[in-house]
Image 1 (tube, rainbow, N blue to C red):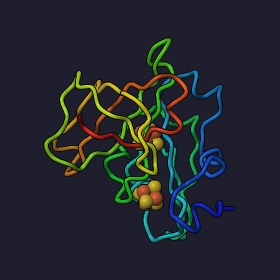
Image 2: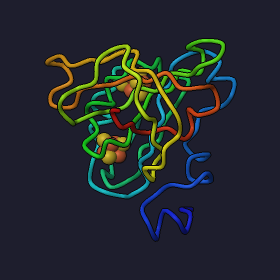
Image 3: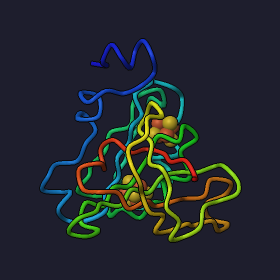
Image 4: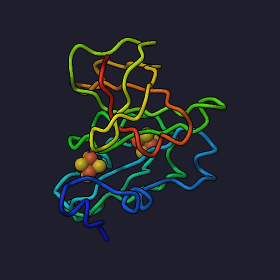
Length: 165
Ligand code: SF4
Ligand code: SF4
């Protein structure tokens, strides 16, 4: 069931995110996909692009994607394929003090590795500084490059975008 915030404003709240969040046990094993897709629309590139069949939409293309986090190895292939920019990869094992979040980024110019940026939550609120640790922009990403941020541990559930300083 969707939260009132999501139904009214299109912004997922904590309960919506908890429904698609990997278990603590899975998070401890390394990078894993987080699919924040809440609307029943005819769409399935997440399913067709995943080499490990970790995401299934199924016969009815309007159904929401079902994710098996234990099949996912965090490869990030599906992140660039999602037209809704609704897929992220979270690595809670990045370092003892930081988590890494890989997100789709369709703005130019792209940030540089090592750059400090302002992390933003789903509503555009500032969530402190983050460091760009990877930028991937090859033919495989099409027109949706990937940017990975390192954020303080505990922010991996909230940070979903950033602003360059
Ligand atoms: S990150 Fe890779 S393995 Fe995981 S769901 Fe996406 S495409 Fe599949
Ligand atoms: S590709 Fe993205 S928008 Fe489409 S069903 Fe999958 S997660 Fe949802």
